[in-house]
Length: 346
Ligand SMILES: [Zn+2]
Ligand SMILES: [Zn+2]
Image 1 (tube, rainbow, N blue to C red):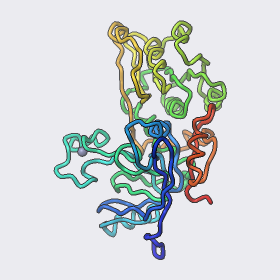
Image 2 (spheres, protein in one colour):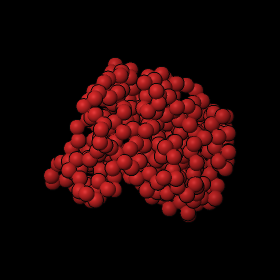
Image 3 (tube, helix red, strand yellow):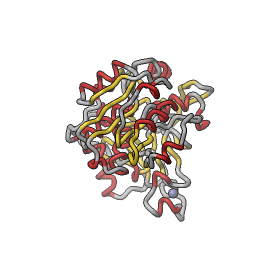
Image 4 (cartoon, helix red, strand yellow):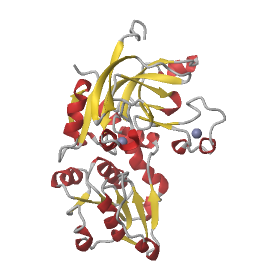
């Protein structure tokens, strides 16, 4: 934008020895075909907390759930400038080898599976600075325009909501009359809401009464469980479709137990470490197990624009970016749902 001083230092937070540390750096440089995005809001994800605790050995700037404004492009056509400059955007997190300038692109990219690119970096997770910052750089091919009617507070949910929508891409959920969602955390809440748009009944199994109450307000049936090994003896219900989103290894054993013979079990948790689960019942019951990660942004944006899903009640608190260390500590407190950082709040 004319007049803006891009040589001025801008604030970002990076992970160092299990803590978030502030740095002042010049605005990041752009590769051709990339955009400079001024961050408007960024969501704190459980993955960020895991990065802070040392997973992936990540040392950089975390943050992969963002909404921002495109302020600069490099080597863009007039049409691209016209389309993107000044627009509010959110962005897919897997940065493909093609966007990184590699030629020829890898086999997965050639097959259109960019989220599985063999040489990808992942925004704020693997090898590319994320959105706990005033500015970040993103390839144009990853960006999606946020419609005017979708507020920043809603748009910041597009990335995790897209991950929830991925289930509908992988499983023909219309075949099912009901589905069980294990977990009552942020991702589980979005998954249950997405399922409710396509399945007559979704039942959430969780251990936090307050979080279950949030789900009920969105029309989701709920069951309170202990959230530990004792559930295995107590929960008797069976479903043809079960989504595991507890983020804990014990959830997987329960999910497997709750899946009917010939049923489908979707795994959404990306907890680290080994899950103590017996695999023989999967064979005996002939369960279809589906691993599920990043999903279609366009579908998530559509659900928000159409008002079919309103994740705003999931926001517990918004902190200014300068308070990122305090915010990530707060985000780990019991009962806290989505915490956001706002780089423009002073
Ligand atoms: Zn995330
Ligand atoms: Zn690739």
